[in-house]
Amino acid sequence: MFPLTPEQDTQTREVIADLTAQAAFDRPIVTSIEPATEFHVAEAYHQDYYANNPRQPYCVAVIAPKVAKLRTYYADRLKG
Figure 1 (cartoon, rainbow, N blue to C red):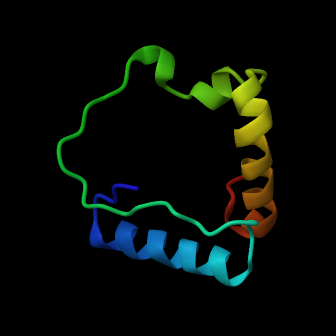
Figure 2 (cartoon, rainbow, N blue to C red):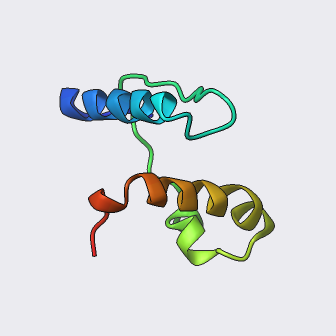
Figure 3 (cartoon, rainbow, N blue to C red):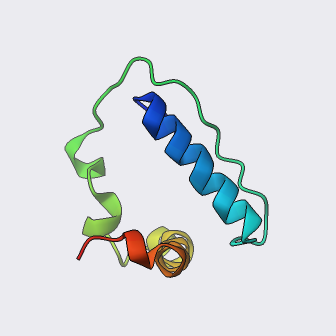
């Protein structure tokens, strides 16, 4: 994660701590949190990859289960 503001950094750390306390995943969360530095916009085909490619094997096997689990933990924070 590359938070752009101190608030984003705090929120990121709080979410990771919350998920860890709830034992939301079978393994420890190992996401690193580092200050944002230089930013490069990804190529167009990478933008919204999961939304545009939900049937790709990686999306089905890896991303979809994680998104579903997070939706159950944070349903109250989702828009719409």
